[in-house]
Image 1: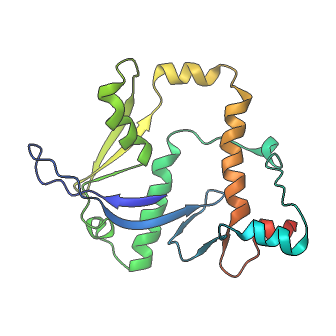
Image 2: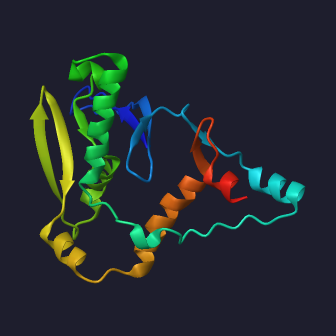
Length: 188
């Protein structure tokens, strides 16, 4: 997840010029870590070299732990950003919110922006947002609509929840903190 700020000059002449702010990594325990340098991405051909050198096949069982997986509700997106803002303020020793968010006027999860951007083209899809203004900054959180609440009560397609989990599990296999063994290295 990356944070960006978009300065808005005027509503008539909207010029979007996003500025990179930070990288955020959220682990399986939903702990927020700031910065890309604290995590390592395995090189693209890591598996090929390993398999050729060791004569083994790398197989991930992405189902391990699925029985304990809890898919976070939609509202958790902003919670991670709020955790980030608190950590960032401590990291830079700054108490002024505007300085911590580098002058941005709006703070929200990427999903909120996507939903808002798609809304003119998706006439049958409803949405609901909560907006709170704090220190001249708008915090936007996507809320569940009545339709989404009813859908959540229905039995879920087991495949879709599993796909979400597999994505998290695969990331935990290939990402690791610097200086620590990755799950892949432990398994091999």
